[in-house]
Image (tube, rainbow, N blue to C red; front, top):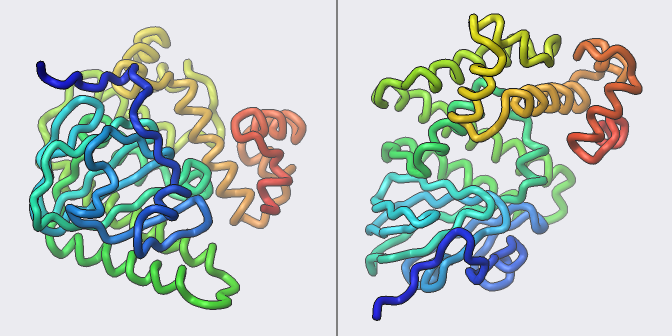
Length: 300
């Protein structure tokens, strides 16, 4: 009898926190329990045998050899110059790994990525690509650039008595993210034409980037697209799995975090900039979506 394949509803798969990656694998560079990366090969593959689910985001950059990886029950063949991304709770299993397979594996927590300041114009196209497929084909030159950033990050993490280690690591991670965003943008022209709902979503993202500091109403964006709010909301949910209202909230919070950390503006000025009627209303909105008050986040 063939072995039973794990389903997404079967929680018997191995849940792997970043702290365990730090502990169990050799030559791991890490920042607390928020980020860990390492060179891996067929013998140190963290997804071998039983299905795994990384408690955070993770990515694999394939350098040599070949592997077949199952992500949420779907199989992908991974060859050199390929990046594979895994969302939190993705169920990952290695079906086949060649003896000469090698690469880099990176895992980072939700809290770490929440503190990274990346603009909507860069992050949203990446989200859309990996919603469709976790695999991104890149060139050898792309891999070389990304690995240069990783190696510098490793030097910083292993450096002694570095006062600004956390800040440097986060800046380097952001650099790597933007390199991948640039690669993704380059590849967009070669992808199949989009359907109507995907076009609506892309147009919504452009409008959201332009207007999110002043407008938080779903009807405003639907009107600009000459759509009824109901049809607009249905199209956005169908494409992205998130409601238009949630996308608006996430865009506003991203802008708020950027202003709190980098603008030098007072909280009252930021509340006005984001079109909140009062500082108190802004504070309640921010805490509802982040768990922190604006003041606490600003001074973290």
